[in-house]
Image (cartoon, rainbow, N blue to C red; front, side, top):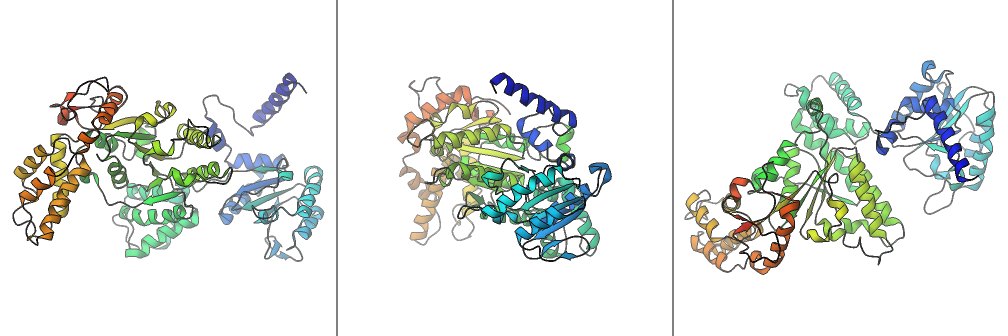
Length: 579
């Protein structure tokens, strides 16, 4: 068959499937959306009516999947010829609605029984993947051969029969790959979770729901997205028995249940943070941008047809609040924060690194809506342009880029980077991130906020702060002026060093302790002046300044060229926009 004949053959079968309604063709629909469109009852009924012999559903939710299947095969409108449903497990064998069928626990006996069965029927086999082989052992050749021999009977006999495999693992022998079709069974949708929650509340009328508004109920159900129905029900039940009531404040309990999914993978780290927006000193432009996009996945946002935000790249001077912002986002948006360590993705076994990336993506989508934090992303992607790893880094990077472009799950990606010149240009184009922000050295007003945050955080004891008050505006203003060119982490260290001196001498904190700590500090703006100027030159045309226009109005714009003469403390980089 030449190329023209092959093209004609493919187009014929595609058009046949389109006309039958088994697939939908729409140029405006993305590849991801087409896959999702196949996850519906009509698709499964078509597969059964077309007499596909074997259908494989990979899911942990056996009961929910079985109820879904029964709702289709017993409905004459959906399947035309209703069928009897028989369920098999290795422990109890085959059984229908009325009784257990003896001598069917053995898979070979089961196949013999299916072949001889003379009624329109659907056989659901639980955990049959154990006979299809694992990474440690091969598939059972006798069972695989018997299944292949059964195909003509399933496809051409006068009696309509299909087999559906339901298993938590997707394991298909190579010899059966052409005979088994995979049906994607999605996790519960928002409407299903809300329906289950309403049933639970109707059953448990003693639970106090006075403070549970419809919006609060929606937030709870949104938080449960990504869980199986059983996991969601367990989380709601735990929230109810925790204090005898249910309201929007129980979201933390739902999120804790989600963390169980994450801990089992080992690829992602759940970051539990109590930091809020008030813990970030300065960066008002970035904070305003994030606050505007809060609740972008709510029902209210759908009225405005607002697309879910994809992500943000935060780059700039080290130690100026990039990672702090990522941690605070979890509290601001009330979403779980997952940190992706690209170092854990890479494995010495051939093919494992790519599989690890796919597993990490699948996990974060399973707990969505969520925030995915990729810290110092340039270090993880350092080998993309290198050929030393046989292209592994490039393939992992390609998988990540494709997912960022095509993802439909509500996952917000926040990536931080210090050395922006190491990032591949493909990552920086529009469509990957919604915006790129540049974090520069703190301005005078931002340094005042940073000092205020750390002084209020650490000066708690009356004896320690007898001479220095945490909200002394005059002192804060003086310290901010003395620390021009200091980064946020250096300011924090000034406060800690001052407290250490007072602690060592067992006395109250003095202003001179701060002055000494400042005098002993050589700021990053002096040791890495050239690197900061280079980053600013890049950011002037490519990134938005994270600081507000008001806080940087007293500073000049950074030179366009990295090598231009400049006092690093008198200018600031990034495009001066009000977001």
